[in-house]
Amino acid sequence: MQVEITDTPEAGRWELLHDGELVGVVNYYADGGGVVVIPHVEVLPRLRGKGHSEPFLDQVLHHMDDQGLKVIPTCGYAAGYVR
Image (cartoon, rainbow, N blue to C red; front, side, top):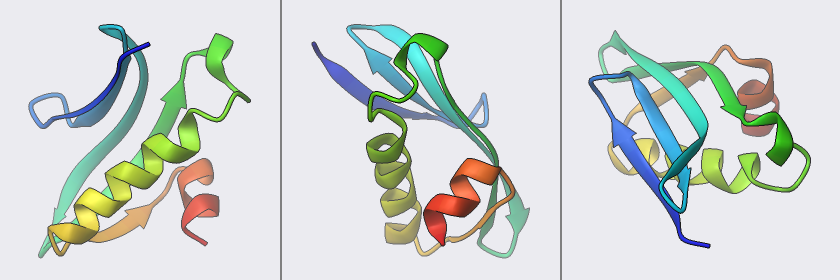
């Protein structure tokens, strides 16, 4: 299975693709001054509980950190992960 994680800024989201199929998203928007808000994280219901969300969100957060961005997670899952 080929896994790809891509930033799609025009859609305001990171996408998780498995063999070219969109299976997860991390929505985000810039709140100004180097701050990014994450209001929603989701993977397809058939993949939930199988360990896909955590590594996906981890890679997204590392990328944002590498860019020097401050992240404010308003999504319950993302907020719990960041804590």
